[in-house]
Length: 369
Image (cartoon, rainbow, N blue to C red):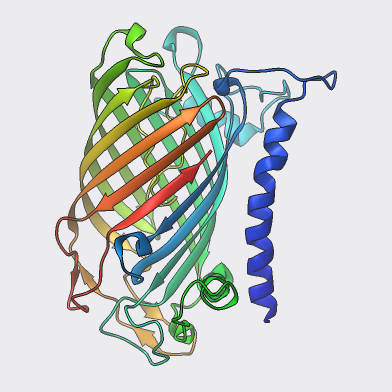
């Protein structure tokens, strides 16, 4: 087993191990005893997993994951939840970036999130070791991200900074081979990673806002009561990873609907990692659904645009539809500190041009909190 593949395995195991460690630590107060806190007053860990195998394919966007830590709901950016003064840069972003102010007359709460992520992209035939210039490039990315959100049940503002790398350092090859070969979860061994896009630093900033168009009275946001709301939103991304502008509608309906907005699990850089709701609203189960139709105009997608490859070659990139219509269908369940989200990304038409007709861009996301 290669050193890189071993490192990929270690990173995966650390990611899973960190989840229960932090949950256990949150239960203890300063005296070492146990205390029960509302969900919004605790740190929350989220693991997200994306894969197109749920839609019956293993090409284009093949796999992605992220591990995120979301702060408790905050009424100030000046101090951390433990009472210590927050670092100057993070404090300045929260206090000065448009829309992010919290507490006081704003009536909004904030959350700061940090996380790591990885994306794997492959052509349709992953067993072919030769260059495939007529299909999507072999590409992998990994990154670190920090985001700030400010919201109530009417408005949401969010800002994120992403710093990462594309190429062998992303460990995409090692991760995919570990899953396919070492775990034996696929009979197709990936053999074309020498053709992956070579090392490139990635940087992106994203800004988003959402506004509630229709909402029930506050007493409808309770466990066991059926409610629904409707919001409109937009987002922009600027950098050398994703450049885009986007507009969306956001419909939620179900039982025990939490105040706030819909969890949308876009990959960091493509979207903003956030926890945009305050809930579940009580100790009882909640179950609700979301439908998010949206339009996106892409100016650039680093993994699709090609470039020099690791083995000294060159991939010309692929032509893709820059005007994309998409609908996200979500199922959300939760109780106390546990929540799960299943989101299906549906593309009504093909967005890749002059690539194998079987290539699919639809996929599903599973998020566990």
